[in-house]
Image (cartoon, rainbow, N blue to C red; front, side, top):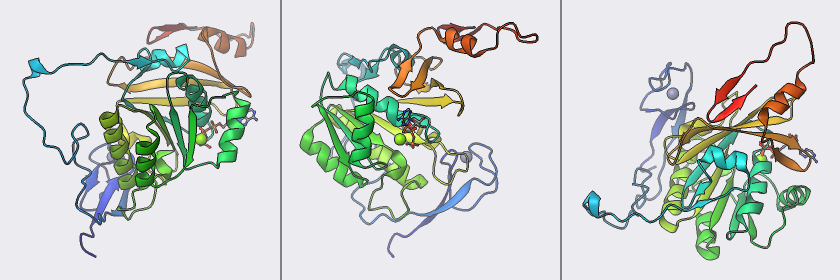
Length: 309
Ligand SMILES: Nc1ncnc2c1ncn2[C@@H]1O[C@H](COP(=O)(O)OP(=O)(O)OP(=O)(O)O)[C@@H](O)[C@H]1O
Ligand SMILES: [Mg+2]
Ligand SMILES: [Zn+2]
């Protein structure tokens, strides 16, 4: 096989090495290296290309002073709690990664966000996880109804790209990055090389066409699939949904933001009608706590710009 090549990747941080390593020099974790065959059938595209410049166009050297900045357009997600974490809404043409453990509510929250984004423009929801019936059932339960939301069940990134060219959405959701693949790469969906390549191609589309992209990524403890952490350096914003299995509150935490602060959190309550934002977060935690129980105490902490008791 021409161009066949074995590379070792750290599945925690994406560190690349020609040989297996016991301890990752990138993140210091032990036993995180996995072997992947990297076969690129065509050399026309390279995953190392710049996100900002199409590979067929030559970049020009410009005076920084003469670069014209178009006004940053921010679009509300429809949730104050989420907008705050994003730094006042989603930035047009940005790539946003939202991670979380299986079942935590990623698809739920993003479907609700779709309902709000659809008021601004066409939304293309691409799922490689669930059938159209499953997604429709969730949308119905969440009362998300709009003619501007389009659904595509697809996992091949080239097909997704051509559908995007066709329908020209303003927003695109990828649920989830671990199910998508590039047919020119021989490793399985969810492998480090696949998730990186698919993300790079979505990033390129976001920048070229000004599409606002939300990519969903699974965080798993066993680490069989490559986690969203390896994508953190590639994307514009990174959010994680956190929560405990037996409690309904969910915390959305910003860990990276090219357009704002990363110290913010947003609090939601997971209900059957979907994620309900909690504007007074102290209420959730205090109401869960036993009253007048000896040995309990209330602590005030500051997270970002919010005070929690
Ligand atoms: N009919 C329902 N009523 C109330 N809550 C429900 C209902 N159906 C699902 N849920 C809740 O939604 C959760 C799943 O949410 P969601 O599918 O958004 O998670 P996810 O993070 O996308 O998970 P996955 O990893 O499976 O994609 C379930 O764990 C459950 O708590
Ligand atoms: Mg899901
Ligand atoms: Zn590592």
